[in-house]
Image (cartoon, rainbow, N blue to C red; front, side, top):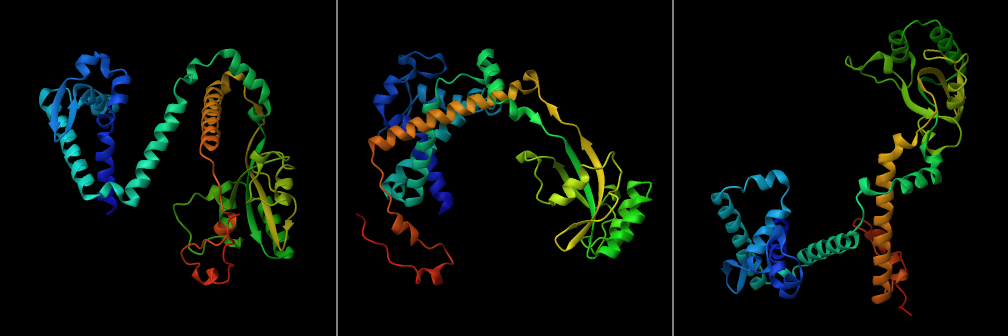
Length: 330
């Protein structure tokens, strides 16, 4: 049923331009056609027509690569017959009432929603055309966002008691290569895999990822406990092992610094592309929010929160009996 509904939806939408003659007359013809040329009839399907304008619009909707497939007269005739087939299917779907099916109606509403949002975005400036002064103003107003915090990469051997941890710290401090660290990790760490992957690089054994200092949200790494993070930022160079086991909860960590990147403030030129996209995205959101507010004023919305609270998801049948019945809407 799902594939049939999708096919019907495609057919209905493909002919929507033919169904609304008023809209068709107002819209400028595609591909540089005159109104008279666009109105020329290529095919009739029942009481519907497919015009030169409809055909040109179908070509315009294709991406550049697909459009190249229809350069020859034979291929263009093939495209026209595809449009005719869609119209035939749409007619039969309407005759059978398939356009009233709930899933088709949902699909139509979603496409109409996307069309309205696309209409709201019309006329927005392309990222490359946003004035340089506007880009510079955004940079100054959001400068904190372009500060890259110092980050350090941490690896750890996880142990369950202080005595064992102290012994492993002593051994790790004497290691002269990342590969030997990996061997020690696989021998001692509680979280080492039971079956060792021979393809896994030893220098990444026990890796916990990157972590930053301070309270910057971008510096967070939930895999690295605060105590381990603090220890990592006391180490001086890559390869150093913290001088003692770091306790967090009931576990002990032997901490090794495996990488580091200094903090950096991205310049305006480095951030310009990202800024232009961010400005455009903000304008899109503003247009969409304005449209939503306008529609909510035009079509009042009322939500029954009590009824919503009683809605049970699949598998919640046992819980549903315990929920109170919804109160009458005021």
